Length: 289
Image (cartoon, rainbow, N blue to C red; front, side, top):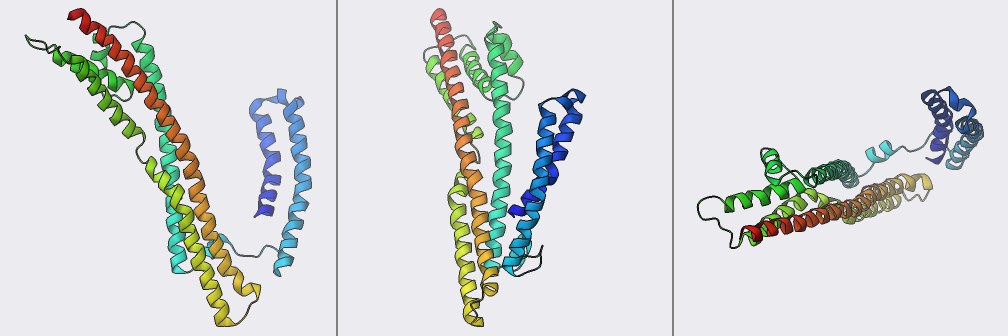
């Protein structure tokens, strides 16, 4: 695995430097990028024979021809049915986790931009009635949803011959609290799945490891042969299940902590706006009362 990575880096690095020069222009030919290309080319010349030597040494130690060995696909195909189910489940969980991560990154970025635009418009001096008319006819999220919900309750309370102003402030605060709860629920939707994968995936992978090692020892007892060639495939597929469990769990845990923090910051911004807007409406209620 390591020597393949070294060979790939040795082949890709010089071409990456040439691409940078082509993209940035001929001015960079005599700049630091040119020095970087020379250094990468020298590193490639040094890494290529080193990687080939490491690959040959590994092949000799395994007693096989250079380039041969167990691949990840062969480990999966030769695994027990229980280990296969564990592997498929962990791969599916990892793919779904990454889909949630990318979806939340896009969602949180869009929510921050929407809040920034709304705050710029709200504090620009535009009247609340005009802003409400422009926002009430479309779907709103975040601060704009808070504003529309509060203004709708404000207008409903002033309809008719007898305005219901007695407990208007409490109703507005309650409406904004419910809107914040719905918005936070929308932002944190499916985050619990990441937490579940982060805590459960290592144990699922460990179950596949235990099952694979148990099968490996069973094959040793059946063949009465303790040669490494007999034991290696079973142990390899067992450890492969452990690796898949960690691959699924580590990004899920990191992403859950980061996304939970971002969601808390967005919720704090909405709560702060709700307090400010509630104070503005409270002054208007006192003026009309």
